[in-house]
Image 1: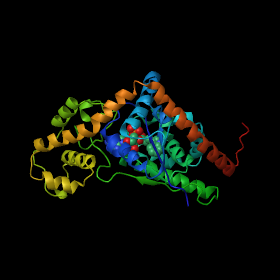
Image 2: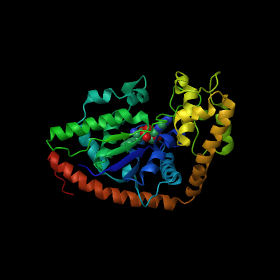
Image 3: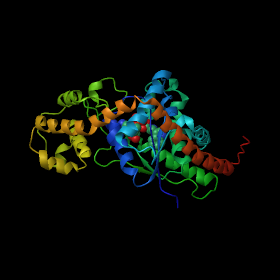
Image 4: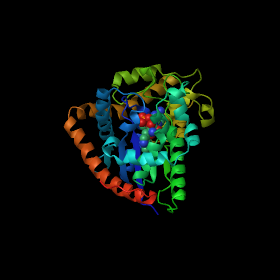
Length: 336
Ligand code: AMP
Ligand code: TRP
């Protein structure tokens, strides 16, 4: 039996938004009281796409600030940046030799990100899920809170763990991880198109609520958010094929920790303008204090760097010990 341990990662690519919060970070905060948790700023994943070095540095700090502002306690959790702990990249290499090309070719995120010209994508983008598996399994984590878009990558992590355990005949050395995906809103969609996920990289800022948006901007974005002509349904079935309506209702449910059914009980039959003003209120109440705190924390860079330094040192102790065991299993020796 493996000791329960939570691991998750967020890319420091700027503009953390409501999707990141409801899909992942809100869950990180809830889990910190129940498990030993490791939360990682995955800077090595970020460079699978070209990053401006100066912007990358400031995005790393902004991600630490967002974690803390959302309620993560840096004393209680290990908060690190991936590049500080060399074992992530070392284990990723081993997994490059365990995972099969066919497995990676099936990854929908790779297909989406590589676009039409797959030949021109970085090799890093292709082996990105192997690095993600290394992040998790380096700490022998058992539970991984993520949004629904990461489910396929976690299935791959399970396949890698099983193949490694089997190839090297080492029992259940690596745990078979459990994804923790939020029920009410596993995928927050764009405010402009209910079929596309809310994303940092979407060109239109109107498509997302950023954690640093102010009250007026949130109000304006929700007012403009796409809906349809019908009113709010009274039953869940009435949301079928109404992507935008369903998204807004799910966001409300998740922010208020209630079920979609209960939102429909309160708002069923009403028009969107009434609902939207309540939704704005809920978003403002939860998100604006986080945005204010991020701005405050960003004024104290030394404090933020200290969090990463302390967290990375703690992580490195676990990582070095586990990597040594893994090298022994594989038959590799490390003399330095
Ligand atoms: P990323 O910004 O891609 O590093 O994502 C960080 C975390 O936020 C991951 O757990 C994602 O699954 C989650 N996430 C990102 N976008 C969304 C979204 N639109 N809805 C729900 N979760 C999301
Ligand atoms: N791939 C994840 C994303 O884009 C980020 C990530 C990297 C991650 N390593 C991880 C998430 C390990 C969970 C566990 O959202």
